Length: 305
Image (cartoon, rainbow, N blue to C red):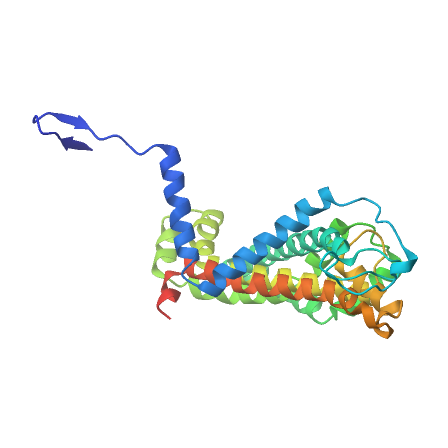
């Protein structure tokens, strides 16, 4: 490109610096994100919770001191959720326990989404025997209740860390999304641009990855959020029922201890019960509302609705 100066000379126009391009892209992203006030609020709350749960444990003691005089002590400004059955600060436990919950939810949703998208897209695009095998395997997994399967697994195999639990939840959480992805790809592969790509013999991998999946970005994102929320609820349910080992710190263990140690019978234990429950609810709500803004960014047609 060139620009005409007052002297009549021609000089090439300078391209914007990389920093300016990055700043402009970030501003554009924030502007699009703020189109939905509730979505932007959910994004801010989710970001704040992630930062607190990831950075907060660096400033909390590794071993919380116990004080028998403060057992089920009431909430105060310095201790917003009061104290637990051992006289330990509940708020610090909520901060420490959020990291494992977010990690399990994210990894489980990532695993289940990758499995569902890859095999669902291949089943619909290739069809024939590949489709029959994948659909049959999906139907078999769907017929087994997840909670019962998790209970059986917990009886024979002790889940010792968050990553293992995330893998188990992710491997069990893909069938519903796979059928939805398969139906979407069946619709998309009939479009003209997909037919043109097939005539050009661009290859199955390129057509699926470069042509089909980008048009399903908002759909995949929403289902990723749903998968993350389902994994968090499943994790909390496992710990509440005592089907996972009570090791480490997370909100599910706190709910289990509050239930099994009779916190409901003490007047000052309301914060101990509601602390992890409210944390889970706020995290889930922020995820769902945040996904609304991301969906509008990825699918501009939704902005007019």
